[in-house]
Length: 371
Image (cartoon, rainbow, N blue to C red; front, side, top):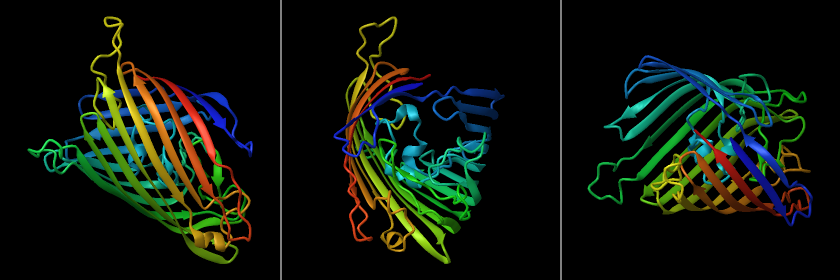
């Protein structure tokens, strides 16, 4: 469970509303049948109720395993992080261009002495960043099939040089099709949101997906003691039809995130486990404190603006986000979080006027309870 607050500053457009919200309530049920098979289901009871994950998994060996159902396709690095491990309240811009949840099948495992992870899957191709909660119980808002592959390796994990052991590099790739129509609600195209979860760009009315979609995502994670560095780039290409013309629209985003655990813990892609945690037996345990900083950028296709494929009244061409924060892990289950994001928007000037959208300044807080 995550309880959040959002406070907007200098919001001259009055686009953002200060609020307190239940960001996530996500209980989960896992049933294990022997050592090989398991069933997992995780519903969401926050603003949009539904089933986030529901899948069957068979673990045959370290090299080969199988998962069937609705779950996160293995693509975006930050998307694959559990929400309980996020350094900031909201994920960065690359997740706007990557799959969120989809129905499909995936094989996965570890290779080369457990230094390398691989995932290969076929999915009912979901719209970028769509969870499927608004559509039906398990649908992800899709039309077509996606092939998704990812490999991530810690190639120097066994190195004698301890500074190099925590270097991880990888790449994800997807190819498939997405089809829609000019009918309202049937475009099967994504929208784009800011860190404050406000709409910052959408396609023009009458534009719709009509063909191939390709994504690529190089990614990096490095950790050494308290230091953590995460970086990823995502490019998404989609054939979009508007009137009688079809064009390949290319959007891209990247982020770089730095973190430092001040005391009582080490950096990790997972939840930090404090060395001196607060507990009933240790009521003065200080837990672990983490400082974080992030830069992220989203760039939408200039040619698509020139051809009128984006909604000129809403869409920005570029967004740049700067974020800082502090996270306090009292123990493995309780986390307090405070971060500030400032996002600058570059307007759409291909129509003879600049879209004067004010910068977004927002203070986030969070109390998280996780088991």
